[in-house]
Length: 334
Length: 288
Image 1 (spheres, rainbow over the protein chains, first blue to last red):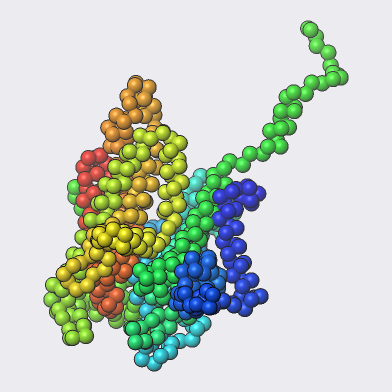
Image 2 (image 1 turned 90 degrees about the horizontal axis):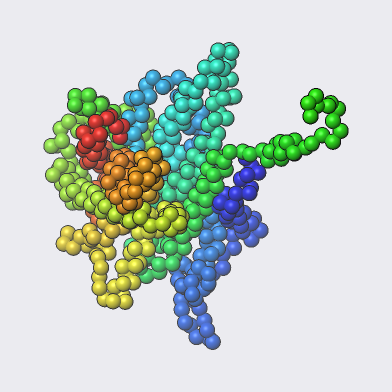
């Protein structure tokens, strides 16, 4: 399977995009110490022609934000938080939902009819709204005190826990149902008759059958977390906390980490004046999601492909065409 | 009929229980600590207050007001934007999908890959691009296509939110329709009809369309779910004073729960009517 994935153009292009972006972000942190070039004033022949925010034409490729920071490097700095969070949360969601889902699919299918309807309630509300309700208290800086109630790591752990937990009921149910589908197959009955224990069946039969589904589900979860991050960013809840500064023109919101949704939310109110500042991170989100969709498509294609053993085919051909040159028997009627 | 009602009421009740349990979740966390007793207390108090809807009040800066006639106005605004854009998206997608099915296969393939890219765009990006587009048109031609944001009660920006909310669902519905139509063309009756000399248009509009429309309706449930997130973002960006705005301004378990019910009931009613019609027409049980 790995070999066919490596040859798959869809998978490789999407996968390489994510990996390169992440690697570039890490290199930027480790070797360049998150250095961000800053240009507040644009001079030409000794004359001032523009002040920050500079547009992409004045400061290629992406322009600068209001503070004069190069958006290209801001994106590079934030990439590791955004992609890292999405992958981590999606991984945790999968981990817990597989563990609980296997148990659910094995033992609790009798109550599935009722539980699935209760859990369906999760679909009738915007996920970002629930996340907002739960995170609002912790992530926003208390304007009255001017500082956060909880430390950086506490906020990060809390946010990751919440983002994992709100998707768990639906994914657990999904995996529980998948497990149950596998358990209904005939070969499971065969394995049971031969004395296999439940644990053995799960390890040797259920998990291998679930694996492809789990991979695609994992990628879909990453996409969902990214979309959730964008939404929370627009609602001004940034990853790891929102720093609120009260200024003469109303409060400004900035992100504590340099995460992408922070750049979006921070500049979204100036969409009409400086459209490139929120659009650059949004386009990066779109590209990342597109790359993940490419990966997903490639994965699906290579999973549905029927493995063909080419060598065997060749052998059969050679056997059929071979003619014995020294026959050790003679035909009776020739 | 009675079995239909039985199935339906069970489903309705169970989902309401689910929403009720979700509605008090904000009380489960005190800061970053889990406080289970406070969650249970909140459940009890929400239940207690919800049976006396006349007495519920919400807090504003200027004092407290009775919730119940007041919340209907933002609710009605949200729901009109929501269902208007769904219907618009549905018919738009249906017309375009029927037209594309008449095109040669090669072009359909190209269109499908374009749709694949469009579907990957986050809704926020599409909303932003549309807003920028409207401003650009205004600057170039001096025509304000639609109001960008709402101030006060007078000129509510309703047109642009509806356009914005239509874009992504239309793309999603279009894709499912194309897939459903194509699946129908692989069935034996299509080949038979073709071999008898019926034209592609005739088969598409008379046979495929009739068979696929059920599947399309069943799939549209997922689009409706997806559109709720869209609604939240659209209301926030356009400052629409809708239901989700109201819920975010008053983040208490009671108002959150009531808001969730108000979101759920119209969608459930909509889906139920659709299901009922399909069951009447096809005389078989469909699970929504």
